[in-house]
Image (tube, rainbow, N blue to C red; front, side, top):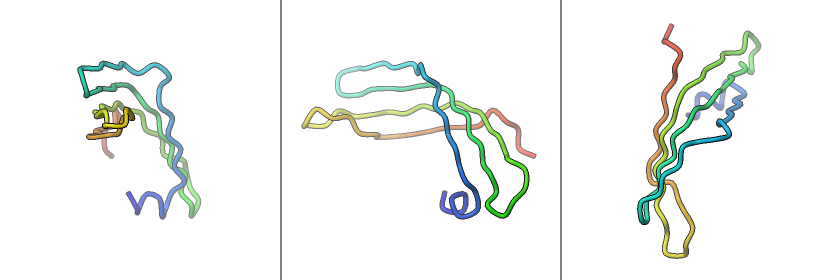
Length: 78
């Protein structure tokens, strides 16, 4: 992701109501996001929207940490 941060100002918004399921020490979050990328060198803002799935694992201290994270865009490649 470093090239994206080097060349763009990124803004990501996660939908307010993700689907959340918990099974023992594992949690699953699924939802939608929007993202805009503003070129630091100037130019038009690039906009994306998509969906994500995050798997979290409960730690011994009771906190939750991300174990896996996957996302993809709904916007076709150009």
